[in-house]
Length: 604
Image (cartoon, rainbow, N blue to C red):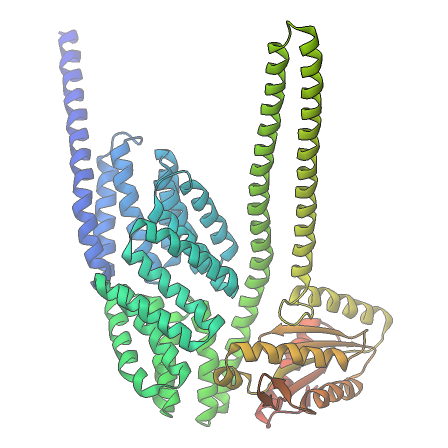
């Protein structure tokens, strides 16, 4: 009786397992339908799409009886990838990152290169949204290496495009352009018009930076045409927003009006936070250019609310524009509040940028090192093959003494020449690695545009001087300077002229300061000085000399003669360097409010 009971129990367990396996199979098959419905809802109702995905992912996990079920894992990866993308697009990077980590774990368990590369790519895009550009680059390069051994051409193009976007975030436009052009060449082999449209749009952004607005507009219109051919709603909205921004920059306001408002209507219908913030800012620029300052302020405030805490690059830019509009509307206190917010965000952004720069250089170095290691392995393989060939030749000629001697001499000479050649190549690779390390060290200390110190190197030297001043009792002063109306100059003449102005200003500063004085490009159009052995009044005289040198004669750029002035704030470093920087910065902005082109002392 007991045996029969166990038999029935075993039959029941087997039936239950078969039933559960059938349910999992049905759930995995139903995932395709859920995926299509969620994709449709992603644009019109992203929250509903998230609810649908959550319910189905939970359902598969409950029904699963075996964590290694391949079909279940594949179904889960597709759903997780879409959910991570929606979280990312609506400004929920934390939830997106959690999905990306889970997606990467499952993809690794599947041991399928394309699935793993897609997971690495998704994780990288979220790291980029969070400002971790170095981490994003490392993920993207991992995905690139994973895909290069497959025939997934479109996926490879998507990853190369993402590497370009990461370099675009760090304003390395020439490098970004190289990657975009590689991605465009790759995607055209895959015949993926949607991705081609996105890459052309990204390429247009760097063309605008490197060649000017006119060239950028032509590229954006090409991307818009591709998006319209596919009826790609997100692509159409993105390119309209870009064209709106370029037309406002070019001063073609009548042409910009309908395009900007169509772009805003489209991105708001999509619900993409990043696009909404950018489009609102562009509409604000248009209203401001028309002189409708109240409307511009409202647009900027809406853009700021969308970007707040989620899109730092847009948040920083909007705060600067809001401060200028508040000042133009006669609201100095509001303008000052915005500038304080802006200063705090810039400090955070610069701290992230410093860390990211060092990490990016390290990532780039590791990538180059890995590529060189592969070359060295190939060289070693060639050397081993050469040795094997020598051994075979020796065995073949073992029976004939005279021929053996001749062959031995030939093989020995060949081995010597091959070894010498390989050793020379190895020496060359080592020299290249040493040069790369020297370049990394220099980049970590020098501002690439002006040749002055960058923030990291400046802060190290300034802290050293501050400690020395406290120890010896010698006076020590600090000055902060900002080029007046630099934003207007950039808007009128373009970033190329702005960069040349910065270079010439740096040359004039260098010519009018002493070797013992520490000078740094603090960021954008701001410069900072540490003046050893000087009280505040003596520092003012030194900075007066700098100011006169800058404003004394126009700066010649091409056919343009530009009158440039700077406003300075001076403070004495009496305790902490950071406190003195804040006081000098406050004095400088007081000088700005009092009319610019002057030197203001901090109020102690």
